[in-house]
Length: 503
Image (tube, rainbow, N blue to C red; front, side):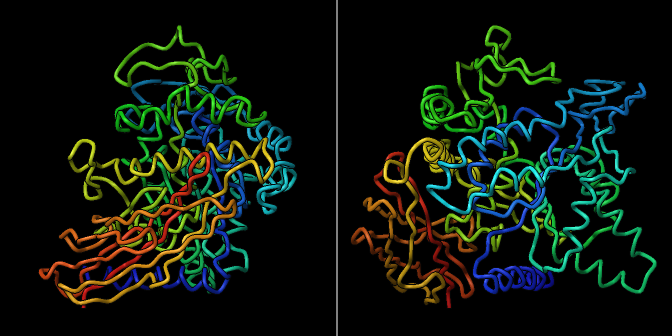
């Protein structure tokens, strides 16, 4: 079974690699489906500031177990999900934020767009983004019977002529995606074209889901599209979600607290970041009576801790697109490598499913324990500093803002070496602001197969000597992260990954 899974892995990754190579490392295609939770709004604002890093091809309103519009006829609905069934019982609608909030945010993006393109001309135009907005299946949690504009957009993208992968981000329920797949099945299932169409969709679509927020994946997608690739994040996103104080080490809390969030991102950085929801900011999302975070007098101290003005609330869906930002870690080719979107391993039961959970933990040096959240938490500092730099791009010209360096490894990213041997890694950097780049070299032990720690001796800033233990076995892999951090403000970090395979 392991051999079969490894072969499938190689075929899948080889296909993605060939596409990226053929397209000159083209930016990944993506569609976002969202239920409009306040943390979706915050994730969306950050995503707009990274919209130059990928090709957004759809922005689709959808529903979830937490948010749905209702059918306008007074029809009562009971959730299929155990938690919300107990919490809400019968509802005709639930905390529905409407279908204009993305347009409102893009309106604010339009005001900072002239400044953003001073830093990268490939930021999409506001009008181009507006044209991508469609309303999907929103009447009830899990509703997938209706053909909607949103489901048709997804269907048409999956059927288009290109073979490039398209990442379907699930920030709410999977129901609109399920409807798109159902429409494809209904059109082709009983035709001679079906085997070819089925393979095309399964080769092309990659669902990145944050939890199951309705039952449509389990009830329809999984049994009918068994070969469709799924990236499933159920544990690691918590450090970017409501209980972040429990998941993020205390020494890193300042990056999510009001002083940093208020000064470096939310305030005095233009109208877009000013719309970012935070604790005590006085804002209130229309339609969601549970959004009381803007009034600190209504926020009770509970299991998630005590919060102050401008403290981070949640961006639980941001890992779905942080996975697509190329910072040099290679995770886009292989999600088991780990990166800004977390680290996911291939399921032993389903080789097309990549997931976190009990078998995907990293050693947390702060708690000195294995930690299910740490594959995501370990990147909090560089991610937040990068966010602050993007906020600066909204108001500053190029010479007065900071931009990330590009990191190179002169000695190659794939090295074969014998156990017990020594080898050198030689790095270099190109910084667009002519800042100095300081290198750090570290072993990402959990990403490799070797259990032993290697010796790392940083001889100079640009060169490290790696000593392999003599006890390593043939075929073992060691991942060395070459981390380059500039001395600009805020300091920005990019990477290269060197994979050593033992002969």
